[in-house]
Length: 338
Image (spheres, rainbow, N blue to C red):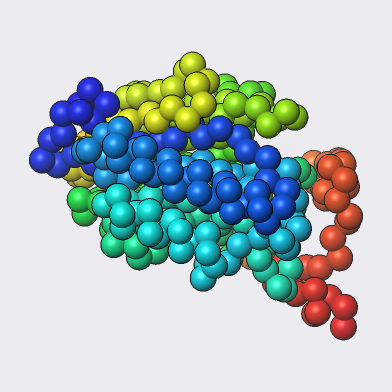
């Protein structure tokens, strides 16, 4: 159903391009400026590469690389020059774009942010990563939930970032809010390859949702990112994937949100997102609509605790060289100091 990678576009199709971007080294403001231009140039390449493309998706860390450096000199803001450049690139090339920035946060650690900009240069989606890849990542936990927007061709579109996709609740929340296509951008390296593949497929199948997923690619002299762009259909089958690890390759496919809608409305067997809230509807009218899951009740009540909680050995970022945090979630540096 890829339409030969989007070359043959149907009336109801949305063509997605996933950029397996070369992993950069960004240490100074000058590096940040240069990498911003490189991403802008790749937006142009995407448009020239495929005139039918509706949205081009860049990986997490596309702008900053994998150093985990929180130096304010290379942090961004939503009204800064980097986002302005991405907006202009989308307008100039008549294409939607998904981008990654590390956002300055005066009250705490920077946020790991994903944005989706439409072909008119308007930011339509603004998301802060809910689940940083602890203990390695120092980013502040996100506080904006999981937004879902109306994207190109009227599709319902969501975005999560990297480690988010290891939590089935994230994809379920996106689908519950109506997402027919969920993007997952990442900077993952080779040890995560198998987990990446089966979680992408599971996220699609569990929710009858297309997922489009892409990592950084190549080496920065220290880390080796894997690329692994993959577009997965709502039944869990892989429509297109990048398996060669070739940097700057753009993996493309046409997807069909209309068929997602059809499956969600008409599937009986394995319509799992519906059946979650309508257990055993063959036996009882409308199915059971209770919540039988202890962990959900405990999480809502603020008492989430594993049976083996006291045995967990890694509970902060010190194994990765970060100082032990002294703030509670929701506190600013100033609050914690008072």
